[in-house]
Amino acid sequence: MLKLIRTTIIGGIIFLIPIAIFVAVIGQGLKIAGGVAKPVAAALPVDMIGGVAVAHVLAIALLLLICFVAGLLARLALARRAVGALEANVLSRVPAYALLKAKTQSMLSADDIEGMSVVVVRFDDSWQIGFEIERIEGGKVALFLPGSPDPWSGSVCVAEEDRVTPLDLPVTAVAKMVRRLGRGANEALRDRLRSTERAGSA
Image 1 (cartoon, rainbow, N blue to C red):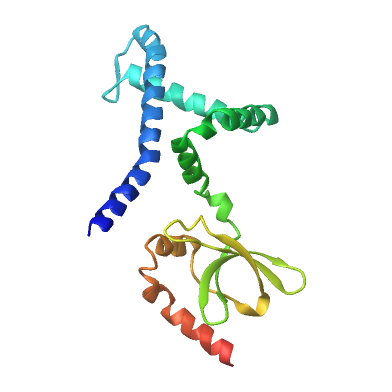
Image 2: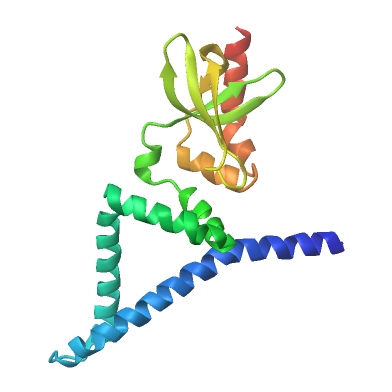
């Protein structure tokens, strides 16, 4: 019982660290942007916009603009090298930063999952759900096998084409099921796996 409590508390801490860092960074950013926005807001003829102080609106807009400019800079090779040097020499020594970066990089955008399809791949005595990435000449398929509870932290494998069977399921539904440690698999997979087994035995 004590072990369960201890591991649960540790898991909660690990879960909360990236969120706390994110909130602290955004809060500090808004504080700095607010200091810049206040003189500008004071010069405007209105104090409120939609029930929100003009200074707050300007601070949020300024912070979003800074993030946008930072995103543009991130596309430049020189900026990437500078950030890489900063990470290697300073930020890599901060464990919380490494954890936050790993969590952030594990999230895929809609563009990242475009073209991926859900499949099951047959191993010796089991089936594993995965995502087909692309076909390889010679009858092979490149697959991504999601982990749980983070579906975007998994492994890549190459399997024979005849071991891979497509499933009529959206990628987002499978990702949700994996995050829930397989809960919902019966409803999502029962009929599809039966048809797969019949096809494999035919």
